[in-house]
Amino acid sequence: MGIEKISWGNLMNYLEVSQALFEVASRSSRMLVLSHANPDADAIASILAFQRVFASDSRTVDVAIGPGTIPATLEFLPDLDRIQLIGDLETHEYDLLVLLDCADEGRTGEVGEQIVIELGKRITVVNIDHHVTNREFGDLNIIDPEAAATCEILTLLFEANNVEIDSELATILLAGVQGDTLGLRTPSTTGRTLDVSADLLYAGADLHTIVDYLFRVRPFSTIKLWGQVLYRVSMHGPLVWTEITPEMLEAAGADESEGEGIVNFLAGTAGARAAALLYQKPDGWRVSMRSLADDVDVAELAGLFGGGGHSRAAGCSLEAGIDARNRFLDIVADRIALSPASAD
Ligand code: 5GP
Ligand code: MN
Image 1 (cartoon, rainbow, N blue to C red):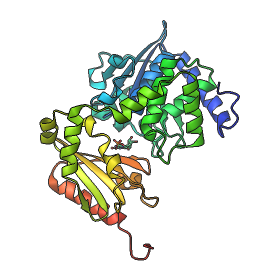
Image 2: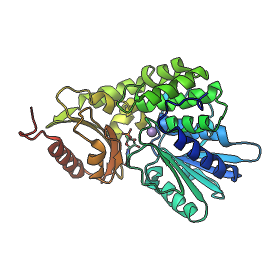
Image 3: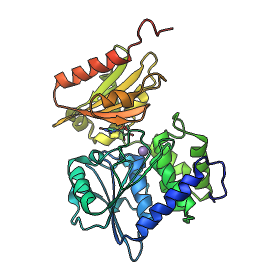
Image 4: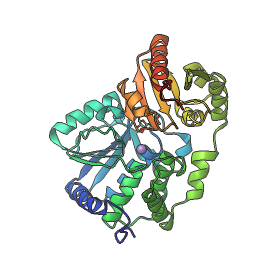
């Protein structure tokens, strides 16, 4: 599988970086693998896949995420109980640190960022990611913005090194790809994404279960939350937006991760040029942004507020309070408004 495939434009690169990765990993006996706060399918699947491939009798691989809950939509994945919160790690005695799906150290949360900085002073840091805004903070940076998901990159790296991908590992990797591409529907989906998905299907990935869990089956609390959140939706100029407050979560009996799909749904609003979902938290707002308009780059907009991401999906954080929220809405609405000259 894989290695004969000459349709991959950067196969040579993948061979080289894969060799570099496996060489660094072979020298490790205690590895820490991290992904970001408010983890999504790609974040969770990446660290689980990494653990499967690199853990052995002679190598411990701890996996952890920044603050947030593991979405219920991922409960079909194996080994979820192995995932720790970065803040709960009992030791920091590692000889290799790997960050997956993190554009910068801060994506692992405040505690995570401190740990990454501390460990980075004495051990090798590997950074594997597909965000165009990645800051290349590692010693070994494997950044492929052409990839639709970090799990697409991992599949290519594993294939280049002839790792045997069994059906469970294939399901994990395909879940990450499906999650970040909304079921191979985002513009980030390429021929290579389809090739990788096909490889994973041939390896026995359970696409049916992935699609049911990620895109169809939802707890009743999620339906109740969506009802409240969509009830509050409004247009601020060309920006369609809504918010999730702690009261709404409590009334629905839902956790924050259950609001995950709302912003993608809103992005399809006819006449809107971008969508924003604002999560109200004690220490400020977490913002999720999406756009379907070719000339609206939400990573750039999120960048105005210290965030980042991809041109179609990005996020940032704001300080607490209604004023900060309204300022964000005004600035974004203003930036994405079609000027009379550019409207056709
Ligand atoms: P989501 O809206 O699904 O949380 O995030 C969309 C995309 O933007 C993801 O690729 C995520 O990694 C990125 N993103 C979300 N929030 C932030 C942030 O605060 N900073 C950066 N650099 N990227 C973010
Ligand atoms: Mn991702």
